[in-house]
Length: 119
Image (cartoon, rainbow, N blue to C red; front, side):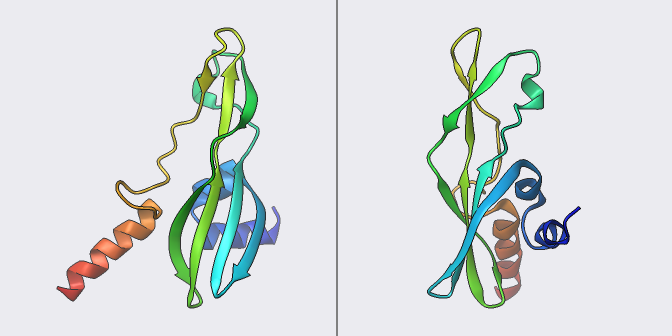
């Protein structure tokens, strides 16, 4: 495995590294942006259906843990699938965003614990 992928697994949610391709990254005004697209592997939970890749959903941006004093945003494009038999759109059920936030679940949990110590 590429050492850069091993390093990314340490600093980014493993789910992203495993199921998404990193397409770009940039630092803009002290903010680090990572861009991801879901891999073109049909969902294993849908193996009884014949699915074909059918574009992407609208990109979402999620705030993640800061790195080296820089805010980090993950820009994620989820893949849309078309059931060849029924012609209905299908998608994976990702739980990437903490309820009511625009942050990863891990980052939201970290901030919640941190706020309890400050009270």
